[in-house]
Image (tube, rainbow, N blue to C red; front, side, top):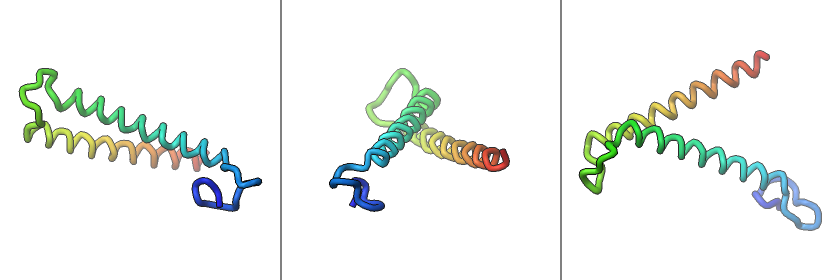
Length: 88
């Protein structure tokens, strides 16, 4: 069995390096998306002067909406890119 549990075992029981590279790339992409969401929504929704240790209701609602919009836009851009790639 391969390192990530798919496909045929790699020769001599080693790790499938291609799958490891794919997993590393996916982790990098997910981390990048998370960091961009945090930076964007934090700058938009949270005042630079912290008055309390917790988010207030307005900040929480803003963060929820910001993250939802980020994912919706990300989904639409991905769909447009796929359709443009398919027609090329």
